[in-house]
Every structure is written in C-alpha cells, then in structure tokens.
Length: 177
Image (cartoon, rainbow, N blue to C red; front, side):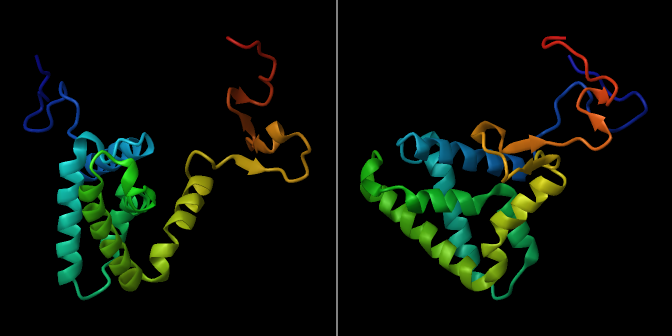
C-alpha cells in the first residue's frame, strides 16, 4: 500500500526515500571496514569494493587535473578511511591472503595517486572532518577541559542559554522523567 501525493506528480510519500549513491557507497565502506576490523577480510561485499577500487584505478589513470568534486566525494563516502584500513590490515589475517594482496596493491596505487593529485587537501580531510563536527556537528557544544583531574570529566557539554532539556530554569529533574 502506498500513499501518493494527491496534488499531482511527485514523490510517493508511502515509500522511504531511496538512498543516494553516496549513502550506499558510505554503507559499503562501513561494511568493509567492519569486516576488516573483525578479521574477516573484506567480508560479504568483497566483490563490490574490488569493483569500486578498479573504477578508481581507471579514473586515476585517466584524470589529469585536480577536481575538488572528486575530493568532496572521497570525503563524503570516507573512501580514504576504507583504503587506510585495507592497507593497515595484514594480508595473512584474511581468509584469502593472495587475493587480499592484490586488493592492497590497488588501494595503495589509488592512495598514491590521491597524494600527488590532491596534495595537502587530501591530508587535511581528517582535520576538516573534526572542524565540521565541532562547529556544526555532534561535538558543537562539547569542550575539552585540560584542567580537570578526573579523567571521566575531561569532556564537558556546554549549552549557551539553554540546557538540553530547555531553558536554564528547568534544571530540577529526576532521571527517567
């Protein structure tokens, strides 16, 4: 059963919106990184990540200029992290070490090409992600307190003007309310 937009053509409101290709590629990368972390090699999505790496090898062989959109795409799907995890994983800890060595060679090749093409911008991806988190993301109201002696109190949430539960006058609450 689906609920159509009665005002004419438009999205089918009864269906979840389809994931964008970036979201699907981010999920692919996350799945591969999870599998690598659990010492399962590239996991059940091995053929997909190999195909993606092959596409990037071909793309890097043919591109002759720095395209900022390429770097934004790499950043958004965190492909730099996937490649770093592939390169960091020892081949012998995977189910098929010989095949994994081939994947590592492709990943290393793509990473080298990115180092040359993007230079400093590639190395600043993590720093820019952190800035984004602290300015507009989940860490925007969290500060590190170096003077705190208690390790569990090093990070503090600050809420200018309002607390998470509302105005500052609403501070008396019991857990679970």
